[in-house]
Length: 447
Length: 55
Ligand SMILES: Cc1cc2nc3c(=O)[nH]c(=O)nc-3n(C[C@H](O)[C@H](O)[C@H](O)COP(=O)(O)OP(=O)(O)OC[C@H]3O[C@@H](n4cnc5c(N)ncnc54)[C@H](O)[C@@H]3O)c2cc1C
Ligand code: SF4
Ligand code: SF4
Image (tube, rainbow over all chains, first blue to last red; front, side, top):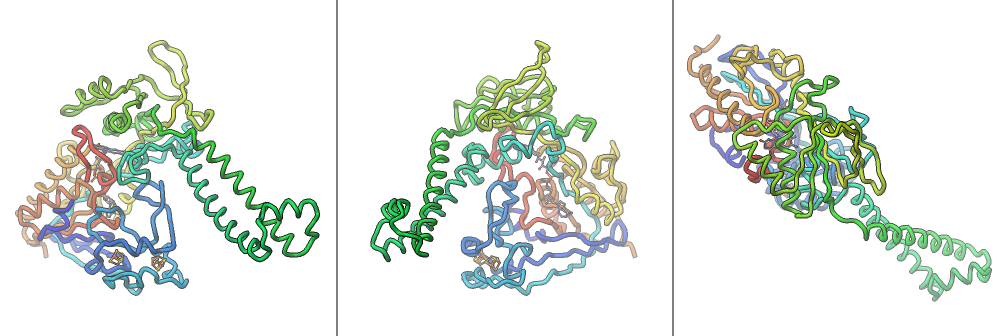
């Protein structure tokens, strides 16, 4: 990644989109829109002071909505280019309110609220589409209760939980437990504010709130304005405290998730959604179960699938190793339903195809191996480039020319062509590059 | 003959194609819609089958 950012022959345009294309193979005229970041890429040092001070917090999409980031942010810590960006949708200053805090604290003087989108025009000999895929939205399968059950999550959300740089610093804290911890933090803050307010009355009347309240309740303070207010505030404080204590007692029983279920083919090999096999999901579920076991040796994982497709060099061995050393068991069968259970433990209902009985089991957390969905952006790209899409919405190719699109001079690689894993994406990328060179070297200039 | 090339998307596939072409001496314009490059791979903790770190 670093190499791509530094290479003298690579003109990197991040935060940009292709708007239009004319011409033909050998000489395509391209119009690119470089979206305004409101931060000067060359000046920003990536120090992050702005993000620390920005008052606006929004859901963090890099972490799949788990946790928050500021309105001024870097996509992720080691991101290239290493510049911050202001999210114009949420920034106070850019929405007509007073703020500009980031500009005040930026030592590099990188913030520019007047920056505008910039159009770049290019002529290129060939184009390679490497626009990737989308994560299938499992809420389209209502019986899996992805949105209703907090501890039913997608594989990508799980990847972020496993990551040391993720929202839980690599700990498998369950989403439902995290919500309680967050609630406790909010109540702590409220209690502190309350205490400060009560302190003012206590100082004014030289009496602790507790004594005052007892006296007030026995009618000693009448209904003077201050007394009524003080009593109300104290009552509210007691409520906050008891709520906080109840949650804290609940939180004492929390532990990280150790009993995991992985559900395969969520949206894949399913005639309601995508008939194809997404190829990489069996393997990434095994990987995630192995890593979870490395983090916490007591972890037990069950992978539910119609079959485990470990096709690739070293993959079958990887699967067997997972079973032998990482406490993974493989259950054959398709999961019919996931229901809520006590203490937010999702219950998996499945057919055991060996005993031919319907079984159910509760887990700490359930991870859905979502399909490789054709990218939404491919539709617009295909129309801009005048290349065809296939029946699913990937770029259309021919079996004997798997990286050639239907338009001459335009090639495709990676998951924009079809579902595939990283080793395959990389080898397709190299073959698309070599096909493109044939155009660049042999065509005479058109026009 | 124009020897520049446009690559759309800077996930692992777009980055690999860019590096290959840049190393061969072609000028590559790499367009990514998100603020940083890396695509989905940057979001992965480690990758199978070697469990190497993704970033
Ligand atoms: C949970 C999970 C775990 C996985 N684990 C592994 C693993 O361990 N090992 C493995 O080999 N594979 C794994 N995979 C598969 C892996 O993610 C893919 O093989 C790989 O990311 C495909 O790379 P890509 O470059 O084709 O697509 P992407 O990574 O999707 O990159 C596409 C890039 O193009 C950009 N883009 C899209 N549209 C446009 C546009 N119109 N203009 C400009 N830019 C655009 C996107 O923002 C993105 O940066 C996993 C997948 C999932 C879901
Ligand atoms: S914009 Fe300024 S404060 Fe923010 S990361 Fe860049 S240099 Fe630091
Ligand atoms: S001006 Fe916008 S980005 Fe800057 S600190 Fe204020 S809200 Fe955040």
